[in-house]
Length: 461
Image (cartoon, rainbow, N blue to C red; front, side):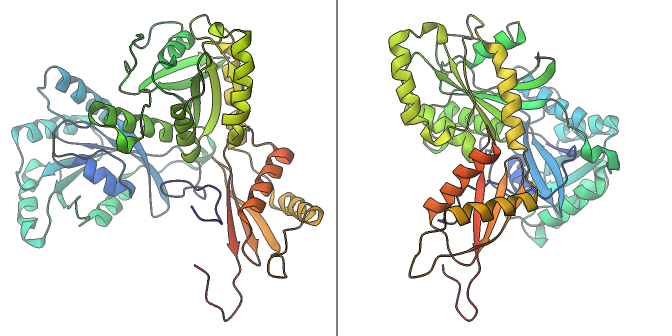
């Protein structure tokens, strides 16, 4: 992070794209043909878990992608085997759900192995789906291997598209084909909501995420156990709360950073991270009966860095006595000083205390996340602010703010055009006053400074 930047998004910047209901592209195929590697190529970043061991991907995991200005969603799926049993059958079922809900399907086949009986069975099912299917011959690393891809014409799915997901060969051409096969959305769809607002329940293990989800649902949707780590995969539930339907996702408790976790915990952490990035707002649960820990701070940072709206819920409030409240107030002042903008609710998932307050807090956070200030009003505001408190003089001269604009929402992003570099402390002062005067409750804010360099002088690095 540079001095000129307070916060930035991860992944492609889609702020200038229309908020349409993004088409869905499902990537399917039998185990270990390179689906997750291809997904990483399509979305332009390494996010899907890739390992040589078959069966690493078990769920339907969506990722946002952009190509040639068009936004779409890529769904990574587990290995699809039509006659699978046990856990493999459950994984295959998830892949079949992805097919049923997709607009375009990419069938990945290992060109080095050729079409197997499982591939041919998958082709028969895809023919019945009546969906556009793109046949991808993966692991075609050079021109000599293209003959292997040509042999897949026999499957009857049309032209096989040779790709090397590992090296990127042919991935751009494949993306062009994907865009051609996508349905054209009617103009009215650009202004409509894509469905229930997506809420991720996150927190360290055993803070009561699953208990809260069950309380909100009014039934046992997920397993609850006193043993930490019961939830491994994110669990989606449509829940009606305060007259609105919300899509809640219960996630695995985060113990360590993703890079430090291992085994099942690593994959659980990665899926939780994906659930946060796929959500619009996150409810971070903290155990009110225990001190705010480093793990709690890490979870909060993950949500802020993902650029999601945030609500902090202090759970187990029924276990908090007067002494604990005294110390908790001081912990909040000390440990949560950097995110005073997040709404806070005190709840008890076990007794149901104040859980009804979650819906208003979620709406407030989402409103801040989507808030936009007109450019004229914003520049009037920044002019008055700088006149009242100018930037400190550095080297005999103070940099001027020439112009300010809001570049995007979800979360709000601002750009300051200046005659020189601004002190990071001054940028933080601007952010603080932005919140005081305009709100943005429940949302992180990104402020970027673009300094105009003097003519004839090289840009400072």
